[in-house]
Image 1 (spheres, one colour):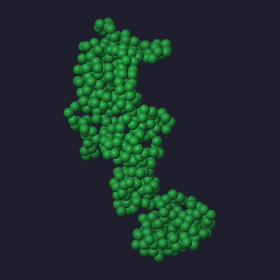
Image 2 (cartoon, rainbow, N blue to C red):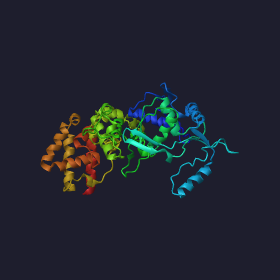
Image 3 (cartoon, rainbow, N blue to C red):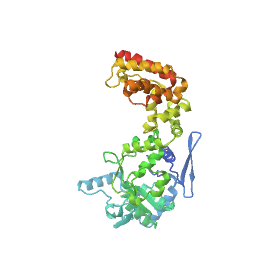
Image 4 (spheres, rainbow, N blue to C red):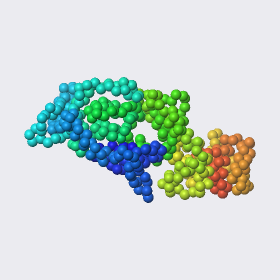
Length: 450
C-alpha cells in the first residue's frame, strides 16, 4: 500500500485511515505499507516492509535526487512562465481550435530571464510514438508530440503525480500496474519518464470504468460509492468483493457466487472486458442476500452487533437469534433486520381494515379473532415455544373458515403489517402473553371498522 499524497491541498490523514479501514474490512491486507491498527479506539500507524517510506510526502528526498538527474542531463528544464502567461497561451490555442499543450517557450533557454524565478520543472518530451502492450487492451499507441513538455514538479521538493509514481514503482520493485482506464493517457508519459531515468517500466493493464445506471462514470467522491458507507448500510465484505470482481470480468463458466479462494484461483485479466462495466445495485443486493442466507443465525448476529450498539438495542441473545432465523430469508442487507423486526419490539399503529382478508366482512374477522383468543388462552407456554399448539389451533379453525380468513387477520394483528413472517413464527417468538395482548388489541381495532 502506497499513499499518493503529493496533492497536499486534498490530502489528509483521515482519508488514509478510511482507506486502511475499508481495506481491512474487505479482508484485503497488504504485505508492505503503513500498517494501521486500532489501539484503544485510536488509529496508529507504523511502516511495514523494506521499501518505505510509503507516503509520497515522506519521500521528497528520493524524488529530488531523480529530478536533479533529469535536470543535469537536460531531460528536464525549469519553466519561468507565469500562470497568467500559461493561461493566455491555452486560451490562444483553444481559440485557434488546437488542443492545449505547452508551447515550449522555456525549452531552450540557457538561463533564467532577467527578473524571473523558476515556476515549474518540465519534462523534455521527445517527439516519438510510444507503444506498449496493455494486459487488457492489447497494443496501445500514443503520439508523444501531442503532449507537449509536461510539468513533473513545482520545484525540487514538490513532485507531481506522474513523476512520483514512476520513481516509486521502480524503487519499490513494482512489476504490474493495474488501474482504471482514466489513467491510460498517463501511461505513455510515465513510460517516457521511466526511460529517461534509465528505469525498466512495469507491465500495465487498464480496467474498464465502473459506470452508473446512466452509463456515466461513478465518482469516488460521492458518499454513496464509499466502501465504508456500504458497510454502514449493511453489506457484507465478501459480497462486495464478489460483486466488484464481476464488474467487467467474465468467468469461464456460468456462476455468480465466488469465495475469496475461488476468485484468487480463477480470476484472469484475459477475461476482463474493455467496455465500461455497469454498476447494478439490484445485483449487489441479490448477492448480499445470498451471503446473508448462507450464514447461521448466530453468525448474522455477530455481524449485526456493531449496528445494535449504534442503535442502542438491548435484547437477549436468544431472542435476537430467533428473530434473525425468522427474517433472514427476507434480508437483503443487515440493516433490513431493523425494518423487518421492529414490530416485535413495538406494535405499530395500523388501519383496522388491514385485519380484514379480501372478501371477508369485519364481523367475520372479529369472530375469527375471538375464537383464536379463546383457543390460545387454553394453550400452555410450552405449546407456544414448540409452535405445534399454535399451528394446530390455526389449522383447526382454517378447515372451516378458510386459511386466508384465519391466517391473515392473526398475522396482521400480531405484526401490524401486511408484510411479515407467518403467524406461527411470530407468536412463537412473542410468547403467549404478548400474542394474546395483540390479538385483543386487534379485536378493539376491528370494532372500529364495524
